[in-house]
Amino acid sequence: MRTGIRAASKVQEKDLVRKAKELRSRPEVLVPRCLPESCPRCPFDSLLQRLLRISQVAQEEAKLKRLARRGHPLAKAYAATLLLAVQDKAPYLAPAKTPFGTVHYAQRGKANREQLVGVQYFDVPELRLLTIGVMAKKRRLHVYSLKEEMVSSCREDRPPEEFVEESLGRTQISFHRRDDEYICPHGDQEPALVLEWRGAEVKVVLCHRCHPPKGNLPSFLGNRMIVPRLEDAFSLYLRAKVNCRDDECSFAEDRLLEGTNAGEYLSGKIGEEELLELEMDDAIKEIASSEGLFILGRECFEDDYHAFLQAMRLPADLLPAFEELKDDMSRGLVLREASTTKLLEALNRDQRLHLLRALLKDEEMAEALLEASETEGRSVDEVLAEALDIRKDMSVISSLPSWQHLPSAATLADSVARSYKIKGRDEASLIAARGLKGDTTEKVLALALLQALDSAAGKEWMFRDEERQLADFLTPMAKEILEAEGEAYREVLQRVLTASGSGEVLPER
Image (cartoon, rainbow, N blue to C red; front, side, top):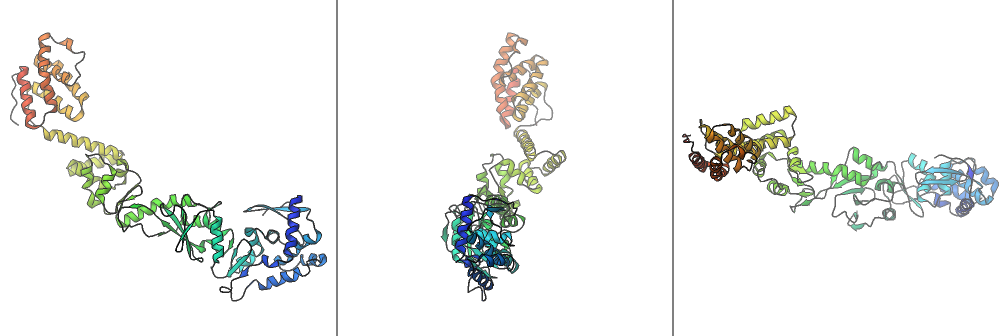
């Protein structure tokens, strides 16, 4: 607390004098009432007797001045405050900055300012605790400040039921009670913290949206308590709500929270929303890993890997390969959103290698591709894209007949068709354009292929009328080559060669 004397306002002066007069007959409000079941002998009895004796001389200014200079700190503060009632004035006050705001108190005698503030603001439950704070801490007592009085359970952590009800009512949260739990309006539907108030034998369930007017719940409750260690009064759990597809959900049990984050919450450094954000994802990952669960967002598929993949909405060309990973996914998987990239990033090296093997059907090629990507620092998306390109190339190659040697015109048509199937129209058009430098047969065939690819614009001037007419005749067959596979590919390629007048015959494979 920091102080600095200043003139009192009339309102402040009048209020302090009024409360001093009220304290003449109410010294018991300054010390806790002990609970018989917890306190065989009340440690505040002798202190109360001192205050009662002072109250008997409440009208005698000289005696009050003497009592305000010596004796127990609380007795001095009580006598000093009663002087205000006798003198009926308090022209100068000292401001004291407390965690609950700035208050102004009157200095008299040799009383400590903490006790003076506690006595002169006995009607403020948080400040009233200052009257016996030092004593309670020293003796490791438990004291609870209600609206009208203080209650002590001595060395037992046993807050009275009325204190619990009053404290939770002050949070302005519409709790509903079920058995020993006080549950916030969203606590049954959303992830929540479960604060177990040990001594009170109740649990308070809070979602990220519900919190007291100031600070977090433990510090808010602690504002009206004195206990040896506030953190020891509570245990903290996480209720990790997920939409589970199984009646016996693995997330049904509350998870005890310990460690740095829990410690900072119980000491008032972070709030409910921040703690839930810090702990929820880690808790889900830990439970999923230990139980082998598959979770997407807040949807839990338990151990149903197939249902998890269906919810991911993977591209059709990837789904079969991921299905083959099932035996490698014994530790489950957790993703925040349905993203192929996030799924790939969640895989470990062995799982990525298995995925590449499933795509390429070639173990050596899969290993080489993965090693090269690691050396070059490429992203997993780039590796997958390359693997799909390789698989597409291999698929095209396997769907077409192969020859060791082809005549020149056949080589042109075959190269354009394969390039079109693998790399697309632009690359195929470049290869077809090279045929324009060949003999007449190749030039006409090249024009037909370019027309089939819609890439012949601006090249017709290079041909005579009869050559363009032949190219127009060959164009439908050239289009067939671009789409044909297997034995049909061989047949249409031979027809194009024959129709072009090349006279070439395709060799046996």
